[in-house]
Length: 435
Image (tube, rainbow, N blue to C red):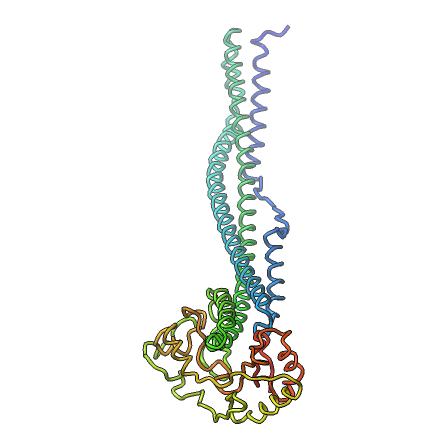
């Protein structure tokens, strides 16, 4: 039977070599273990929000093909709504992409700070283990401890045995800390890389959303410009027709007000669509002359000179089209359709309305979009009536206010022969813009 005292050197030697082996492994790990991580981020799946945005974009493209001058009130309003929803949707996508990019960037920064602290902790552990390992190789503890145990009693042997076990556990704990710290560092580096990749992905999404928003806004502004041209036509007629047919005037004004409200928040595309006016359709006053009270058109010369006028069967028109009007009315009468109506309107009446509803500056009178006035008011010079080239027709004593009206049916079939064409949004309005 081996006594505790005689066994002590053997156990001590085993523990000494075990500790030395641990230290050697730790030392090798300290200087030889590479820390790194690889992360497969993967493709970001298209989420529901992006899918909805794509649908709205396609709907807006279809809506943009609706002719704002020729389509019905309902069609134009639906088109405006589709474009507004597209713009708002693109704004939401842009905002969310930017938010996610900011969140991911913050996560990456925090992960990098955590990794930096863990690296410092790891360096401290490596230094500690390296110190133990060097000491173990240079000054092996076995011989010294064994000499101390040679004359020891059994009680002393047990005490020293407990001491060695504690030392062994302590050494093992340091090695475990080293390994767990390395693992934590790998996780933090991987987290930082993942967050960086996510931030880059969201930044790219934000850039794409910004481009899509710009396209959507340009599309909306271009269509709003068409609608404003329609307002210039419609409001000009409404102001005049309300004096001739109060109910029809109210109907036109209500429809125009709805259109004006729909485009009221849309910035102008920057160029007018008026017929030969050359006016700038801007939502802000021009840089010069905006504070001047005037009735002079922006160019300094009157681009809308009063035409030579001729009255044909009670309708005053430009002399250049008088014979065509005469032929049209005679042909209608031969087919039982008695046409009458109103042609030329002096644009000074429209200037007076603009001064009343929009303001007295150069900009307010000539350039402010019609929907920016209260109530909405057409710009001078945008109506063919002001050039004597348009007629609001009545058939058999009543305004032609529908496409089922016999007068409209006849004109639709025959007016083109005389060079007159309908403004589709207004059944009563016929002019020469198609010639």
